[in-house]
Length: 199
Image 1 (cartoon, rainbow, N blue to C red):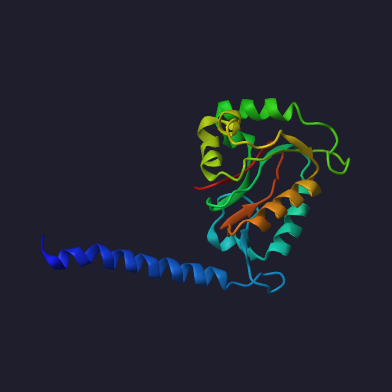
Image 2: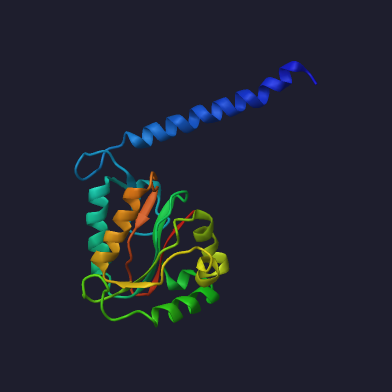
């Protein structure tokens, strides 16, 4: 093998590392469109929005917006704890999932208590801990919620109101060193699922 051929993979890896560093630095230097603080996440009104429709928000402004979204939503949703390692944390209505997952959502939401376990308000969300395991959450669309989370070591599903759900989202995001490209809260006339995912 020619000795100059050995350097090609090394140069390619070095160039990829530089590109990754530039992209990360550029995204880290964006300012929140609402308050001017450093932006941590992208916010959109619907999953899979065009990049031009995603607003850069700091942690505090994102949580304030999500509290409006979660509290204003009149249907019900299963909310899986956010995990680092996936680029998006979004709401998807039930109709966008396969039949197996739709049936599972209906079954799970049938067990939703009427009152929030944290504050006693009206519960609309069934919160699921996932032990912050990216691979487990990534499997949910294909394997289903119960099959994916059965080995995660998470706690039992918890019935929460919108405000208490966002509080848990905020606590989880604070523990993570992650920046979500897109976050969107629940909206629309259907029950659904809030989950970290990639597209």
